[in-house]
Amino acid sequence: MLITSLFSLLLFAHSAQAVDLALEPIQPIPDRLQYDAGKAELGEKLFFDNRLSGDNSISCAHCHNLEDKGGADGLKRSFGVEGRVGLANSPTVFNAALNFKQFWDGRAETLEEQVDGPVTAHGEMASEWPAVINKLTADAYYKKTFSRLYDDGITAANIKHAIAEFERTLITPNSRFDRYLKGEADAITVEEKKGYRQFKEYGCTACHQGANVGGNLFQVLGVMGNFFDDHPIENSSDLGRFNVTGKVSDKHRYKVPSLRLAVLTAPYFHNGAYDSLYDAIRTMAKYQLGREIPDDDVRSIISFLYTLPGEFKGESLEPKEREHLIFPIKNRKDSR
Image 1 (cartoon, rainbow, N blue to C red):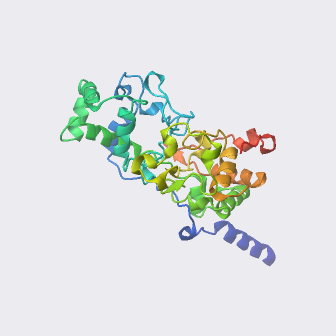
Image 2: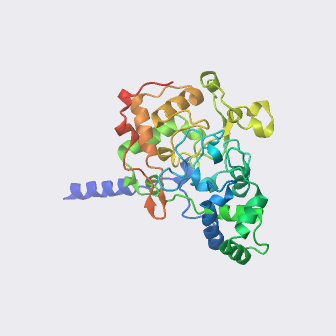
Image 3: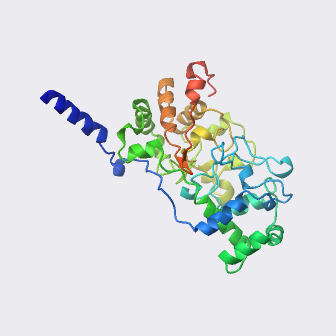
């Protein structure tokens, strides 16, 4: 009886053992961010309104599908009005409020500033703010709501602010991994814990860290090897932050993407070069770490990545099917 009691006590202590967050490179996503509920509601309507585009054909949601694409669109590069192909892969809008800057090259400092890009870009919504304002002013709902929420009514700045307020609601807290970080030891499996340990040991957390598991620093694509020797330059987006600063040292430097929704947002990288997590991880290991990761370890790391999506509107975003079970690694062609 004494032995059984001691065993039960030890088992309880082990399962209840809390993770020391101060020592972890990844932090839980906050339950919510600060935003104005009325303006966020207005921003949500604007986010789905095709009238923000020049020909009234697409909305923000065209490239940022909140229903089944993890806040992205699943395309190598997004297309805009008249089928115009954009320059880069669309990142997820989920948790974008946690990024330190916006766009792959970090050219927008804030969510509000980011809205300006797709609305006016020729390859995206191809619109102009005076035209957008005229269309919204003709709508009774918008005219009344903007007048109630903003002293100066419908302006470009207020449209951008409202959409940004909505985007501040698009965070995905309470993932299984976040519950694990908060002390729920059994929220992730032994295999997933192994994957997290390897994610740290291989050095992935040097760039993928913080609450968003990325999105908080810039890094050159090709630290330990020239990525663009093996991947032909396709357009100006391949120059990365150089397009913003003009500094040679910023060539091929990008904002590190968040991995929170990575299991939902293939294809990967700024150019959508890879369709699978397996290929993306092997490529990152080669060019960023100068290492080759064995297949079993890749499998474990992918398992860990599946613990990262949280909840949106109270529903888990974690997919029920897993890539490495559907497409066994042993049958995958090595595309390095």
